[in-house]
Image (cartoon, rainbow, N blue to C red; front, side):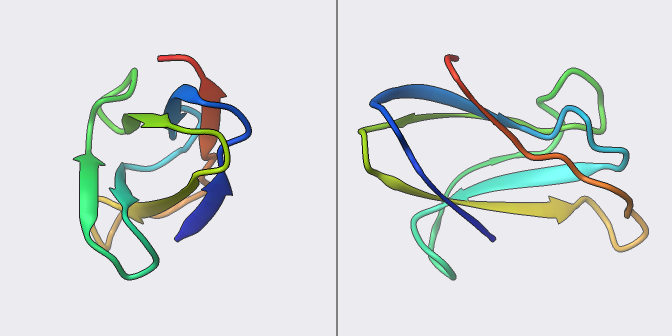
Length: 84
C-alpha cells in the first residue's frame, strides 16, 4: 500500500507503465479500507494498469499495487502524473 498526498487539486493518472509484470491497481479509502476504484489492464499494454483520480490539494490517496496472479512478479514502477 502506498500513501501519497496531492500537492494540488485536479485529476491525476496513476499507472504502472514501466512495470515488467502483470499488475492490478486499487484506489482505497484508507489503509485496509474500502476499494474506491480498481484497474487490471487499463494501461498501454495488457499487463499494465492505469487509474484516474480526482483530488483536492492535501488529500491523502491510498494506492494498492498487486500482481495479477501469484506467478506474476518482477520490478514495478508506480507513476503518479498530473493530468488525465
